[in-house]
Structures are given as structure tokens and as C-alpha cells.
Length: 339
Image (tube, rainbow, N blue to C red; front, top):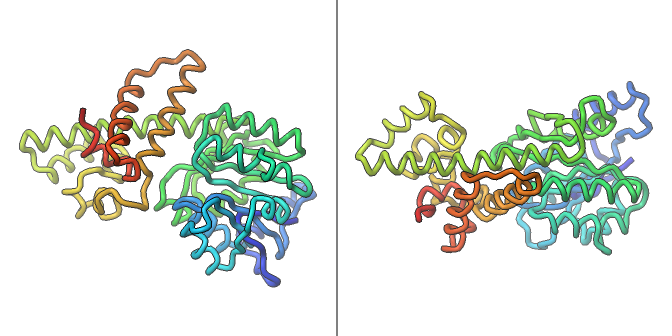
């Protein structure tokens, strides 16, 4: 069988550890699909996250055929140097592999990739295993799961957490819309193991996306809280390094303070945080955080859930976005998120 993640296999492709483990698992369970030295994975969406995820699949034994809507996407160069094949269209990906992964930015992008006239469903040859790693609304995931099923494919929501550093290191967290005993879980986990260190079965279709959206809700709000706390401490004359020691040695500690700290003056402590380079890429852009928070508001309203802190945080990110800071890291809310 062939797997599509963004590039075509070469004539001699060495089976990597992940592929070998997956082959052994499938053989033990009597599954008909198997990996071979010629298997190909299709990967669609080569931004900072997707390109690094695809690279880890390629490095660990899969041959990739890769595609991005932007021909100049920087991920192409890195992946082609690793041996991946560049696809010229979604149709080429659909025709080349049995397994396809996507990492795109919006609900409409997911629909375009899969359900458009030029997309995967319309051009697929045979049944596909699909993993969508995008952060989208759970309702859109369920919509795509249903459409895929009608077309004879298996679609699993598998959004990720951990950011670009974890994508590069292969230590991402995956939130999988499947139960631990399900066939879907058994099929997707060998691929996700190649890219992540924490693969979490979230119970049922659509629940992976739900968990991811709620996680980003917490992240967006916590970054605002960290920013306001550090700003107030600075205005009160507290030394930033001393205050940082207090926060990360006590109850205020969180990922936004101890890993992705938004204070530029602390770049000696957090040299890999976007704040150390004026909030420039690679980072989780403010416009993407704003998109996720709006999705969370819409999703909450659909079940009658009111979230005042979420709405206030969203307003702050919207204001920073409208001031022209949308391409900066979302942690730039430290500077730009003041009314």
C-alpha cells in the first residue's frame, strides 16, 4: 500500500523504524493493509508545523509526496532535500497514496482540500486513511468524517500541540478523535508515533479537535494573564528576572511563563521563545490564535456555554491584530494587547 504525506517514494526506500513497527503491529492483528519499502505518505500543508512534521515522517522511513497551495512555501526545499517528491496538485496526492495527512489553517481550507472538485475525495483511487492535524471546529471535523465515510475513506481528527520546536524534535502531542480500542486508533498511531511523543486517544470522532480547541482557549487566556502580571510587576519596579523566579517557582507557573515567556528582557532565560527575536517566526502567529479563539466562542455558543474571559481575551487579540501585528507571535500580546 502507499501513503501520501507530501512526496513520492524513490525506487529504493529503506524501511524505517516506525514503518517496521507498524508492519509488525498490523501483521499481529491480521490487518490487510501493510507497509512496504515502497509505501508513500501524502502530506498537505507545509508551513512551519507541517514541514517539520513531514520531515520526521520522511526521516523515519516513509516516502513522502508533499503539496502546499503556495508553490513558494519554504517547506518544499527542506523536504525535497530529504528525498520527498513535490506534487503539483491535490489530485496528484490523491492518486499517489493510501494515507494522507493535512496541516492547514482553517475550516474552509480543510473543505477545499478534501471536498472540492479538485480535492482528495473527487480524485482518490481506492480507499484512503486520512489524518487531519489542523485546528478547526469540531463540527467541521464531523462534517468531513461523514463526507469521507460516504466516499469510502477513513477520516480521523488528529490535531497537534507543542508548537514548532516540538514539531521539529518529533515530540508533539496528538489529540486523536478515536477510542483506544478502535480500528482507527490502531491505524493512525504508527504514523503519529513518528512525529510525536504523547499520542492521546480522545474517545470518539471529533473529540480530538474538541480537546485541541479547549487547550488553545486556555493557552490564549493564560498568555494574557502572564503578560498582564509581568507588565504590572515591571511598572511597580520589580526586577523582571527576580519576578520570573517567583512566578516559575510558585503557583503562577504555566507554559506561557516557563517555556514561551513573552518578556523580551528575559531572552537570556528563554532564548528559543519568540519574544527573544521580536516575536518573529517561527512562532504561533497571533492571527492563528485569534482564529482558534473565535472558533472556541462559536463552539461554546453552539452548546449554550458562556465564556466571559475568553471573549475579553479575544477582544485583546483582535485589537492587536487590527493594529497590524497579526503576523507576530501571539505572545506579542505582552506589548500590543493593551486597551
